[in-house]
Amino acid sequence: MSTSIDLRTSRRNVLLLALSQGLFMIGTSTMIAEAALVGYALAENKALATLPTGLQQVMVMVTAFPASLLMQRVGRRWGFTVGALFGILGAAVATLGVLQASFLMFCLGTVLTGVYNGFGQFYRFAAVDGSTDAWRSKAISYTLAGGVIAAVIGPELAKLTKDLLAPVTYAGSFAALVGVAAIALLVLQFIRIPPPSAAERSEAGRPLLEIARNPSFLVAVFAAMVGYGGMALVMTVTPLAMVSHHHAFESAALVIQWHVLAMFAPSFVTGSLISRFGVLRIMMAGALLFVAAVAVHLSGTGVPQFWLGLVLVGVAWNFLYIGGTALLTQTYNPAEKAKVQAVNDFLVFGSVALCALSSGALHEGQGWAALNLVVLPFVGATLLAVVWLELRRRRPASA
Image 1 (cartoon, rainbow, N blue to C red):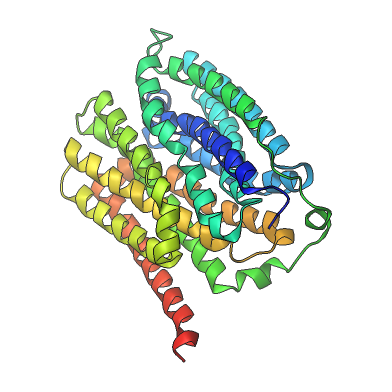
Image 2 (image 1 turned 90 degrees about the vertical axis):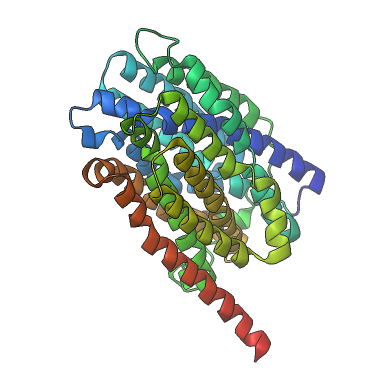
């Protein structure tokens, strides 16, 4: 843990990182609302409708290691600057793909934005740099709270700009993301996080296999994988599922807006809840909320069911992802953080990529209900793993 900046500077960094989080999540929420619909329109094989979103998540996974190792060498600000430049380029290429009705070019644009997102996932870890142990959970939580910006602005921006370059629908939305990524690039220049120490650059720390034997590491990674992957499976295909059930795009955009709000609005209190009740209990609550979301989705296909189910999925993701991240930060020392964070995000976004890539085919072949049922065994396993760790931690105290 770095101690070279005071709490005031740390909070300023969190504010800037939260704003950056919101800006890059505007792009993500636009992808959620429109990418599957664009993919369905452009792809000859309709089962590939979610391929662009899936490829984006593949690149988030692939970027995890090089992004983390680059920032270990050059620092957070320069690393995030590189990521934002990829975001500008990716949005521009995706726009050209829609304008030229090129599925391949649209996929290339989402690949490039995936690199941007891969760097952006480290905003939450950057918030921890320089924070006191007591403020770690809140720093992570408040940074992710920036996603509320995306919840408010993202879907509205998508609706307002989808016909901006008429007669080509949706091209305007992706063109607008060029400007959003450019604003993020500017904001990131004002963060002031200490550069990596000489020890962080040179020391290797413990081997990864030794760290991975820590039960807290295993549960943290698994819970984040299931929470994010399960959300991606359901969320990615939701606009497509709603349109296939004869709901308007505006209804789908509203559902996504509330979903993104539910993902990030709890972040204002999640850190405090973790401090009060413990990280494992919050993760348990997240798993139970995911079960409730599946039950709602199985109850019907009206707009209210889509809305409530996606809201519950959003809160479940928040508790599992923030909880998993907070738990992970307890498992490594400063010299180990780059490789541990990289492994975590590689595995988490590998899960997200697999789920996003398969969601279109699952929905096309098996339907909305079956897709939701796929999530349940993994959520159940997560709940059991978190309960096991909680009981394991209690055992020495009661012995």
